[in-house]
Image 1 (cartoon, rainbow, N blue to C red):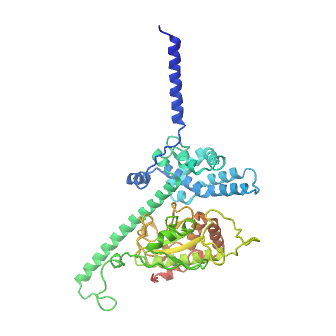
Image 2: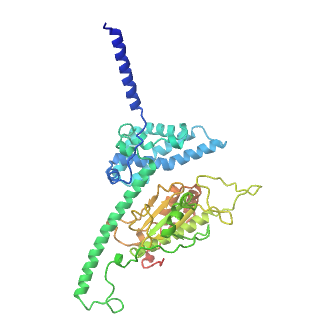
Length: 449
């Protein structure tokens, strides 16, 4: 017998089940599968991002790097029983979000800068609310940490709806890694083009010399022919060079065999580099002698200034125990005087030493890279000052200045001791030194390594 009530009830239950399933799909968290950053297709898609997507992901990285440490420091202060003004968290988040478009990585590209301003004008309140819920309201459980790239940038669910979901699932360290690799790839491409031009010039010069058998070198005989690259020494591993005393302000020298241990660290490599801010200069002294001399001059000033700023007497309690605040990455080797080794400035001759993979995958020319403490997966590249039209020139003025290096350490150092020492060094250094005055006199200097 046909029963309309039973049929209607079954249809209603089916409709409710479908609605519930749709709601579950709608509220689903971001997909757990992420694009592999080492796959060419992921890197290609990442390189083809729209200006809006670039602006969104760089804004997330900027806030993750600059705002979250401030919030976490304030939370730790409150947890220790310290006083915290009402509304402090909101004030920090609103201040950082309102200024996120002034980040250097966003300002340096016009289209990205404009896209960021449009995003901020349209969604500032939502962005502030999302970061407040993530940084303050949520329990900071590493296993359940919210992916703010997804929250802000996802094309289907994000606030700005700026990036394809495949790219929005990438976490901040992966985005920064891809950004850094992209800059390295671009630098390598320009260096390769410059090398081809130099080889063409050398070939033309060799043909002229061969056509003129009376051409002579500086000693009266025909000088060596061939490009600088052909005369460069073959790659090899130099002997390890002992590290200087802690706090001496001397540059350290890395080689292939100890690079990972002294620059990256970690349990599987030994050492304490994983909790030390390490600024590494990848040197090409024979290909770029002028840039090399100026960069070494910059790093000597920076290393000495950081060491002077960091020299403090150890603070101990009545029992003789060190009472200095143990902040992020505060463990580390101590000198006999009790000083903590928090910042290292070093160089490695990339013409003589193979850089271990993956850190040397894109190093094909002079580069200065910061490997922050507790954040080795997020290296920071310090750009040289080459004009776009003069990438193939070797000029001392193209090397970073002490001001450039100290600013990056103060902004991106992984340890509060590094950021504080860089700020003090910046304030106390002479203006002429900060600006790299007198570097043109280093044109003919060659440092033998």
